[in-house]
Length: 515
Ligand SMILES: CC(C)(COP(=O)(O)OP(=O)(O)OC[C@H]1O[C@@H](n2cnc3c(N)ncnc32)[C@H](O)[C@@H]1OP(=O)(O)O)[C@@H](O)C(=O)NCCC(=O)NCCS
Image 1 (cartoon, protein in one colour):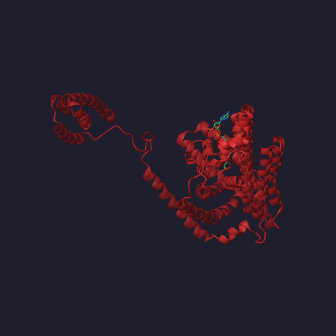
Image 2 (cartoon, helix red, strand yellow):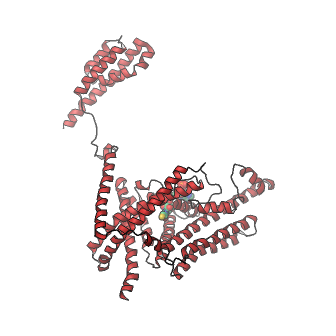
Image 3 (cartoon, protein in one colour):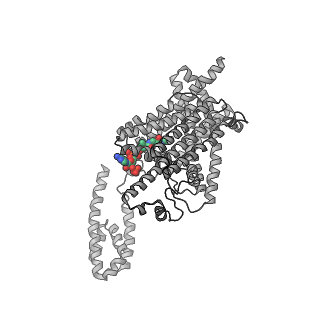
């Protein structure tokens, strides 16, 4: 009720003040000419405030030959009275959503302080319970079981065969020695081998550790996506060349002429001038999955930036390993029994306990990989496009998250899989399902093969994104949608981790125990 009483008069006063100010302005213009008006915009503004007082209105109207200085003085005086008499204005409480949540810096700091304090407590508790578990030697053994046998590293070196084969095929295709059909067959065989060869090697060789295997498979998966893109782009170049050849005269469509027109721009190459080892290996090492004949390049290597990224890379990888050894492993180990006993309340408690370190590790991994490492490589190679991630943390829908968290993969999916499918008349829904199916396959591939255990948890986790995306976009909006995305990240991942670890534990250690 008091609100209404206050608001009413204020609105009325304001309305009268605006007309008051207008008349004052008019008067000033008459008396002092144009310059006075310009100079005294402030005065008229002051008068807007003054006119909350009815007396000020009268004053302005009463004195046509008003002196500017006097008006200023009076303005000051009356402003002081206005400040005394009126102390309310129309405004929302800061904690209500209508305030726009703009003044929250302190609360953000409070969140950080709370996070640090609660994690410090957890860290102390962990130290008191388990002692120091961080062991750098153990990390090395995760990669190499036998110091004289380096199967994962050998696999990576062998992958060069596929790069050379791709370049050879492209060169043949460019001069017409290989037909498009034959080139396609060669690529199919090569790409299938890229996927299958490391799998057989890892499954056959006992000396490949799970971490070494995951690393080698990661390299092969990236190579698969890169060479797929390399083939697509070169094929598009040939198609453009053929289209030009059909429409233009023979002399214009001649490749040497094209080279001279486009290729003359500084340092730029045009097809088939791009079919060199240098160009292909630049793409292989560049932090992107999508091939381009001429990538945007940064003008120079900034040493300060490079060293900062290098420091972050070294620091965060140590932190990651330390947190996994000290925090994740004991949490997972203590979760095994409730999972085996199917004690649901304990399972949930353990899951939530694991969610905190798992999430923290995931966030650090994101920064380490997508910011520090990718920027380090990009700076070293003067690779100009640094958009490796976008603001996925603001995701209000699951779709937005997948569009923004891993830009290299998303870009590849759009350019080489999703859009070509849409162009062939596949519906959006089918296209998205196909992309997520492919992505689910790779997630499962990267987990199941190194663990030598096929459980499909990663596959199902990825496929579950489709119904989740539908549910969030249908029923949740704004901050609720954002919270839902965070919850799915915080809770979803440890579920998958626990599933795999549990199955791995049962498969390997239970049998050993029984034996
Ligand atoms: C499936 C996926 C590719 C869909 O992406 P999306 O951005 O939601 O797709 P949209 O339907 O909005 O369309 C995107 C593009 O296709 C274009 N497009 C839409 N319909 C089209 C049509 N009929 N023909 C041609 N292009 C079309 C749009 O114009 C848009 O182009 P733009 O990017 O240049 O603006 C994306 O969700 C994705 O990348 N998912 C997998 C992510 C993943 O697995 N990541 C792994 C991380 S570890």
